[in-house]
Length: 208
Image (cartoon, rainbow, N blue to C red; front, side, top):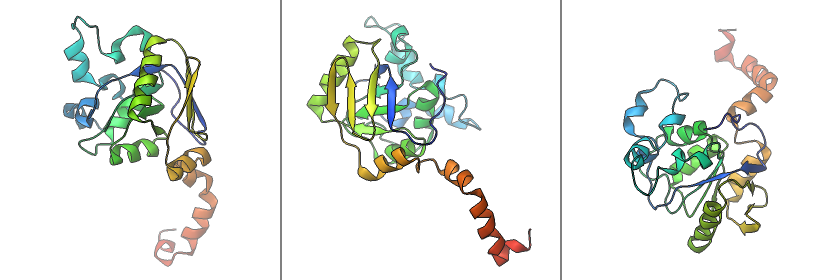
């Protein structure tokens, strides 16, 4: 895991080492099992990311789950495959990934609600076609300690001496680059204007 700060403001570049989690249709139940949904806040979800998958692979001859391998501790870019984040709409899934340390996800495709939940947290979800994604994953797996960089504005992932053009919808891309993804930050930045508007509303004046 990592102590990297949570995303704030404009997000133009996400850099760091990578962790590859291969497989299609990895759903939110696998990303964060249902028993962890009883939490009051999201604060402790990081260690529970992929909890059941990690337990299942703990004694596997092929080695532990990627999230448990020493070379991936502190990784910030997650590399996945098709239809990642499908299943239920729980916000806990991207919250758990963020608290583990993930700051960007690159994959073949994402479930729509998962994509939106990531955007609300300032986590870019960029897309590559199947063949390109396999090349990216292989390059990352062969260079586990090398930093990669996702240029959100240009839509380019670079690392291991290579670069790949990715797809990121223009609307979410603009929200990330401009900082508009951060609803709380937008409210704080416009606090005085909000107060002035509230003061003009007759149904709020009685509570002033």
